[in-house]
Image (cartoon, rainbow, N blue to C red; front, side, top):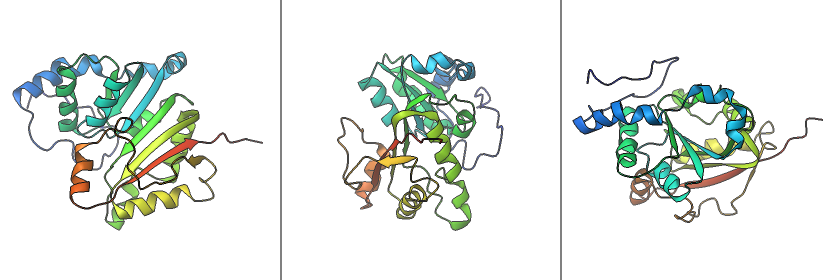
Length: 234
């Protein structure tokens, strides 16, 4: 694996960067395909770029099934996928390598680094599906859903745009719902789904491999669609 170049860690990243070594074909895709799909940090300074198109950000895309299907189904939209896990990025590269897809950009690092650089009201949709629930209490601070992160997403979404969240972990479900109902947050977003336990249509919300495993194991996922509320500063 000496030929595999990883992003330089800029702050502590919880969880593994990689599980198993990449196969020869995956290494080739990493070296040849990934550079053409890498998100260019200079775009963060190009405010016009974010208003020329519909831009969707997926946080932790796993193996990339949802991100890839959405990009195929909506060629007029740009999909930015954030995933620090090497094997997940390699899986997405394999999918892209077999299809003509030119509306995906990859940020192979911790999404928090990107969120800190994006301009206000730059995103049309944010997606967070089946994130690591960090079930141990001492690890709850590692969960993505935190008050500061919710405020950051609110700042980055365009007015009236949405944040999709799903999880099958009961503890994380309670955590998410309680965070969005706090006085500090409850006026920032409005829940758009009347039945948050009903599975959305797969044509609009593709099924992922992890979600299939959760359903087969008898766990009941929660599906949320939060719309950004326009907050009057006065």
